[in-house]
Amino acid sequence: MRMNALGLARFQFASTTTYHFFFVPLTLGLSILVAVMETIYVRTGDERYQKLARFYGHLFMINFALGVVTGLVQEFQFGMNWSGYARFMGDIFGVPLAIEALLAFFLESTFLGLWFFTWDRVPKALHAAFIWLVALGSNLSALWILIANSFMQHPVGYRLENGRALLASFPAIFLNPHVWLQFPHTLFAALATAGFFVAAVAAWHLIRRHRVELFDPAMRIGLAAAVAGSLLVIAVGHLQADFIVRHQPMKFAAMEAIWDDLPEPAPWTLAAGIDEKGMRNTFELRLPGVLSLLAHAPAQEGGKRVFLGIKTLNRRYQKAYGPGNYVPPVKLTYWSFRVMVFSGLLMLLLAAWGLWLQWRGRLTSARRFLTGLVWAVLLPYLANTTGWWTAEFGRQPWMVQGLLTIYQGITPESVVSADLVLLSAVGFTLLYLVLGVIDVYLLVRFAKKDPETEAAQAPAY
Image (cartoon, rainbow, N blue to C red; front, side, top):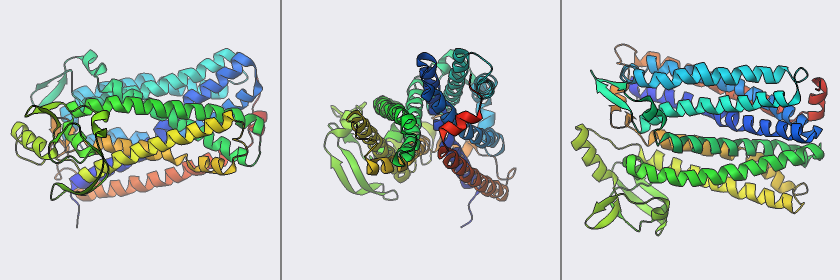
């Protein structure tokens, strides 16, 4: 069956954003860990940490370059495929994106160049300051993008005028409570991603007993970051769940496949058979009372606190916003959330186990665990991707929660035909696939190199 322009535009934006987000968390987290490695070198004079900073810095540069390339397409799609959204949101959406490009990205890229090319030209402390400014710029860049995204999730600080959302309060947009849950969640997920990446590369070398004196401290840094990041993501995720159940109850109901109002104490389903057409679950594997530990039901119905179901919420939305179907893709949202949760828990267990083995002095001889740790680098990517799918698919059909639907935001097919969208969607998907293969190839190739050789090729201080 031939897809229409709306379906193709949604596929294109989802696929290109997913590809781009493969690179973002590693850029955010690895910039911090490389800065930590160089700071340890500056403070202790231990040459091992200088070599590690150089080594992982090369891997950071590869990932950063591919991340920039894949991110260039994102903003153009708003004007091309989503012109209704661009007209409605341009006054608000453009502000944080402009600040991100003109301030944060320039800060990041400028000092990255200074850091990479001045190893032998500036004092050690100044050189370490360069990579900390890169880390600051990278994470500020993420902050401004998340400020823009958070308005779509939880609009604040705006006024409606002539069918457009106009900026009424910049501080309100910056202080949007959704931002200060979403940004820490992203930052800590990035820290966990970088931790697993550093640990996986170290594990590959330790299995071969190669440069143990270098990769043993790298493993400590990686595992510590992985444990800290995973724990903090879980803590912030609990706060996010409580926020979502109040401000995006339909998303929460889809995350939990709650079709009918569910009174407290409410069970959490490990798995469910979801019949979206029949608006019911065919089976459920429940953990009694656990959902009420994750979030607190906000509604009062018949003297009891309840989690509002999809059916009730859809009726309320129809009454508030007009006829239509306001139910997101429940099956995709439900399973994306669970894959994210289970991946995150497994990450925490693996990283904590690794720290325990290292504390006992048994890690370098635990070949099976080290082999598993190499492959475990895929877990944070799986968790990051499904986490974003949960956030974005769970908001459908809203582009801007409560203000603009995807049907209002799409460019009319008379302006941009389905054939043109199909051409660009296929083209960019294939291009990003090629770039992804190149990225993996380069990362694997450079990760297998000898840090001593890499350090010897570049002048020391």
